[in-house]
Length: 234
Ligand code: BTN
Image (cartoon, rainbow, N blue to C red; front, side, top):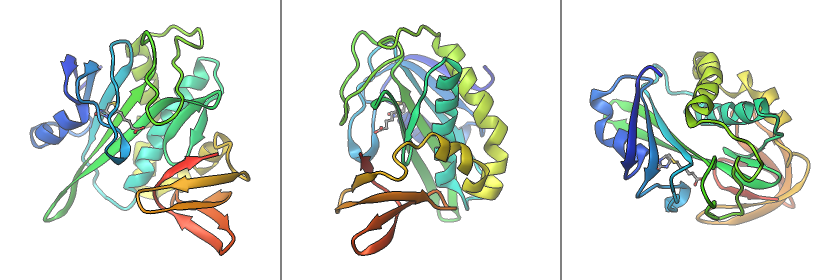
């Protein structure tokens, strides 16, 4: 694959790109067979044993209005690749992917800011593919192997990026609306009672909608609330 750097072992593909982004091109993908210090959202660690797919893509976006939606596009790209394998994936807002209610993919996006604004966005993706056993990172998990599916990491990666690059420019320019329908079609918590947990608070409500910005609209006892970040629990 063009612009793909492959490592057998690395600390973290996200960390590698954070350290080397200045000398690397837009679109560079870093993939590793295992990570010794894989990182997840909210400073959690991401256990990254051999057999999983661990990669990060370096984006140098020409406009920065819709950066969070690029992460949602990545989640949708993973979901689309899983659909092609005959699965029925579920998106767990904002950007986890589940199968049978169990986590199969997590995504960590990190922006690199400079005095002139955001100079790069790193989207890191971990997918449970063929590990001997999957780590329960914050929530019960499942792998493709558990589901009886065999696919090489290369084929899975290329299926994900077929979709991602197809919609990248459109989402970059126009935001969530480009993928809204596809995203909502795979977001099974819509209409259900959910809990949102983030570092500061726990909010309960009905997941009413995903806004035009990709934020979650939660109907709470105090009225509708727009949620920008958090872990969704059904
Ligand atoms: C989460 O669900 O908390 C996000 C997990 C993201 C893990 C991936 S694996 C590849 C990339 N490198 C990292 O250190 N983290 C991301």
